[in-house]
Amino acid sequence: FGVPDCLLEVNPGRVLLPPEFKDMADRILDFTVYPDDTWLVSYPRTGSTWAQEMVWCIGNDLDFKKAKETMQQLRTPLLELSAIMVDDNKEWMKELGNSVDLVEKMARPRFIKSHLPLELLPTQIHIVKPKIVYVARNPKDMCVSYYHYCKLIHNLQGTVEEFCDLFLKDRAPVGPVWNHILGFWKKRHEPNILFLKYEEMKRDQKGAIRKTAAFLGKTLTEEQVNQLAEYLSFGNMKKNPAVNLEPIIAKKNGPEFLNKCDLRFIRKGEIGDWKNHMSEELAAHFDVWTEENIRGTGLSFD
Ligand code: A3P
Image (cartoon, rainbow, N blue to C red; front, side):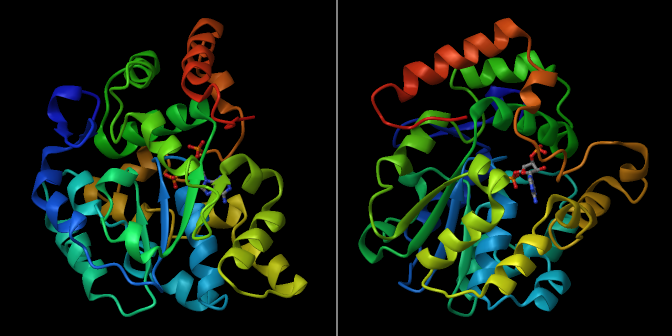
């Protein structure tokens, strides 16, 4: 992922995705969408696993038992996973199955996750209008988090500065970033769209739960809100193998890998970790880039 040349440029627009995506692009565009689907869409590393766990639990009457027993990818799959988890050793991926097949075979109501931008999602989304929760995050934290993820999952060798440069030049995977975020920001007032920010989930987890439950048409008691907030806490998510990807990473990189490496999929879970990784100059470039792209849109980040 560190090398833009290994990514495919997909039309319409210019979205950087691995070449494997070509095999599923049309299938996804033509995908059948149902009104009782619930979608979670986000740019990677925005807290989407966390938000998706919240959405799935609310939508499934807080079935914590099933949530812990079944990997998130099987309960609420990332639609394009088979294309973005590029790996020479595909044995472990066979166990998960093709992600598009997986979603197609799911019983309704389906809970589906995607990191694709609006223009690459199924066209029926615009007609059927299923509920869509979109999650965004402060781009500096998102980039730093994505850098660590690429080191963990894609064996990225570059520096954090080089990775940040990909963002600033609109050459980041699944990017351009602003096209992704603003595509949904502009639709935020549509009744089937809920636009959430990582920072609001972090500052007020219970408020985010209540807001999401109301959006999904579910009523939760205060006790249930408390239980869900506890289940979704960073500490609990970090040690939950159904969401922390550790079983998958152990299969992909070997059982000893995680013992020797301190990188984790559920990593730090903080607002402002960019300060530990970006120089003042680099952060200033990010701020200018952000400002240039969100000026006049009404969007802001902490
Ligand atoms: P960091 O790398 O900054 O820690 P995604 O699921 O979209 O890939 O996003 C991953 C980011 O969400 C990671 O950020 C991860 O630690 C964070 N995250 C996951 N669960 C969380 C939780 N319960 N509370 C706070 N942050 C969480």
